[in-house]
Image (cartoon, rainbow, N blue to C red):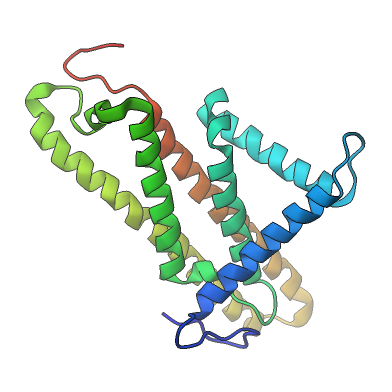
Length: 227
């Protein structure tokens, strides 16, 4: 689907508009990272460095709370997904801009990243033994469980992509309707609602990715085997 409305950037035949807004989100994050690096101080951080350290520290605590200390190994993946989705979501609150996450192509790409990263990490951790995760706890039910688990894992792509896409589209429609229904002095709380949705949806995507990762790195037991 194509984004509509008063946009600063318009897609071309070769570069869709959601891709341009995704590049803008990446440029913002890279710019903040470079600014923090250039002003890096070993003690008493200020400005951008202080802001980035607060963000990274908060994300690290979030990951460790969900996945335990081992989750620190995957902070770069989870943090990148969360921050990118958050910035994309917040762009829709800026007049003249729009959220690339309100396009199914963007959310599908993000879901595929989470999906393949989850299984890559699982295979890297367990080798060929990772396939045990698809066979269930009993050998007698292994063929049936393999089919069910395979469908379940593929369905995660749809779940992640459609959930984020649907919520962002619903947010846009709701905010647009409320802007027309209420006078200007009541529009600030409406923007607050949009801000809340942007954070919540980024957090939900990151949370589900962490749960999938946690499942892929744990040991699988079949037929009463224990390790």
